[in-house]
Image 1 (cartoon, rainbow, N blue to C red):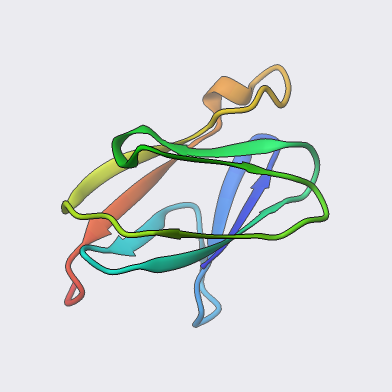
Image 2 (cartoon, helix red, strand yellow):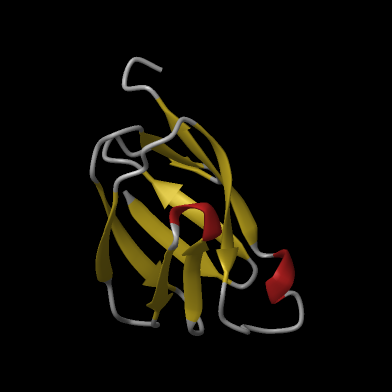
Length: 99
C-alpha cells in the first residue's frame, strides 16, 4: 500500500489502483507500506499498534505492519508539520481477509 502524507491529509493507494482516505489492513498478516511525503517531514504513528516511523520528502520508506486485532484505530501525524498538524488523522481499519 502506498501511503502519501501531505499537509494536512493522508491518502492510501492499494495495488488495484484504488485511492482512499482510510487505511484497510488484514488481521494477522504482514502488509508492506510504502511511506511518502509530498511536502515536509511527517510521522506515521498508530498508538494502538505501538509503531511510529518518520516520513521524509523525496524519500520512500518501506515499512511493514502486522495487526493482530480486528477493529478501528487512528493514524496520527507525530511530527509538527504546521498549524493544523494535530488534525491530521486517518482511520485504520483492521478486518478479516474475507472482509
